[in-house]
Image 1: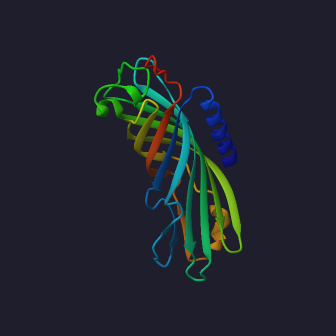
Image 2 (image 1 turned 135 degrees about the horizontal axis):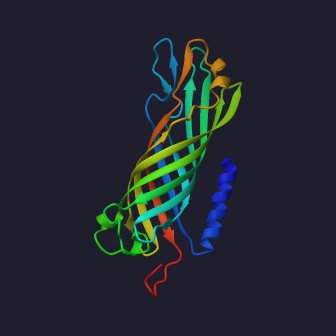
Image 3 (image 1 turned 90 degrees about the horizontal axis):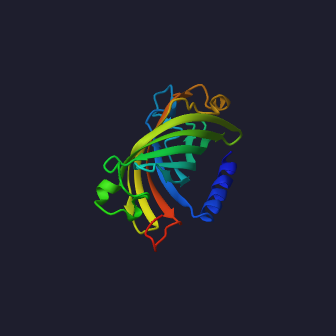
Length: 239
């Protein structure tokens, strides 16, 4: 699944740059809500998170409504997270590696400039940067989560799918007619994202340890997107 997504991203880049594309590349850091998925001990030892934090990379395509500044950025991305835990009674190390393949349909609302008169993004718009660049976004999505759990002697590999909804705030900063940099802050909620590979790994923990895995998952993220336009006509000052 992940390999197919990476191939799709490469093909999308190649295709887009060949037809005067309007694309964006992004990277973000995410952190899961505390005490969501973790290992705990009946002996009162501190819990060990299974997926506490990670990072993701994505590519998106841009289009918008004609008369209102509501912009759509469908996105393909991959995410990575890793956590280690050492069993206290025998020093056996258990490693979790999580990989996600995501499709997000990002929708941005420039609420301070909703009737903007330019059929282009923030790049060449005149006027106050704050009003032109600030937006709120909603981001429904579909995620494939692959978890690989391994110890010194055993391994498990499982996959699950989950829908999600994200929301947040961002700000466009136009660097030139061709580039815009956009910092993002947001939150994403997975209502049904139970961790794979739990049943296979439980026997490795011993009688004094157990998993705590909520069905839902909440993540907070901070990211940066670089948007590139290839179809700008400098002579006519339009896209």
